[in-house]
Image (cartoon, rainbow, N blue to C red; front, side, top):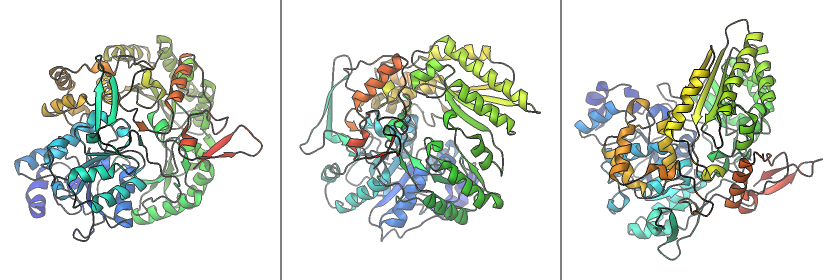
Length: 619
């Protein structure tokens, strides 16, 4: 197949390097000596998947530290898919060019709800049945992990096994179990795997529904299967594996740079934020460890930028020291340091100036809402004064471009809150004009609020497409000159909301949409909303049931069986506080908020010297 691929196939498609492999630092293990053989499948194009930090971690972890084998595959772009189908080329991995059906495990990562149609398309390209109950003893096990699977139910009928939580310990243990049970019937193998913490096997659970369509109860069908699945947590992040020789692509990828994961988790408590809840508790890497990882990555890749990444990087306790030492070490070599979008209250213009000595980029801040009332509702504990002070300091220091992140369609939002966003942007622009000799650019990216599972706002309704479009039209009519607004597509946000809070009944609609040609739903040029709506109608599914409908506190959610460590009582309390416009402080700088994660996962509480209330959580 390899010869045919390179000679006859790749010259006919755009960006053939996506499908070639052979990159620097690629790992090829002996197929015959490997115990379990796994294909790591990213359900999007190569340049998106190769930017995924989790994939880099698992690739190196399995290949470097275990006797198993892990190879990569990505979703082919439609032009490549067309040629593959015409020439009967099955989906293959980039390391060995073997078809996916030869592997023991096909493991997908779900970073985005609408990637499900790409997962189905990739299985079909591999010649593997899409429904789990149609796959026989010889079929690979189809496994899914990632943030989306904290509500796995919309996809449960397609997937054999879900891996819930951090993968560094969970995946090697799972692959060990795959190898240890290789001579058993499939049902027995899967039953044994349910004993592993973090493993969810949908076929062993029954769901009953009320007449109104809500979940009545969910229970194991077989004795010994756990009623709740507890997420897996890596307790010591500092000693956890992190790749020092990541694969270096031969094409530009979305995030083309060395990456340091400085910490995992966030306890800020923004009420809309899924990751901020499900990835608790906070765990940090030491500065020494991070500096060693930076040196190794630069040595092995030649990258010219190092990104400090986490959910809230400026909350990393050693961020200033780390950034200054990295600049001192790498700045003279022309290697820049970058931070993701910044919280205003943690913003240090001195730090920003320090890390951008090598090259200036756009300053990115995330106030999320335009009025203090709305920031209180979502528990974004920042003030307008803090934002404007940060912006003023930035423009004084020579920045000419500022980007701000907001959301629209938030709970209790009024027209005044939308006006507040425009007014805030005008103030930022005016400050820039005051200090900059050149024209300043102020950009705002506005996402549509989507209620997520395991968050305080899981009980809040989602704004309808009509309502969101009205808000977008209103804001475009109000914006001033030299202010650029970009909005997320209200229709994709609507579908994201359906999947976020959906149950197993959605599988029929997902399959129907796929059969109608839906794939790459996150890409504007391939998104077909009308086909999705046809699929809902034909399968008798009302998508509004999971979006604009407001759930009651008594309702059993499809994801309630997953134990994330944060209690449902805490989430209810936070939702109630939102309605009263009350805030909850960060427990690292104030008293414990009672979310439940510390006792549930054995977290030690360190009392900070001189402050009996302030503490930090440490596993």
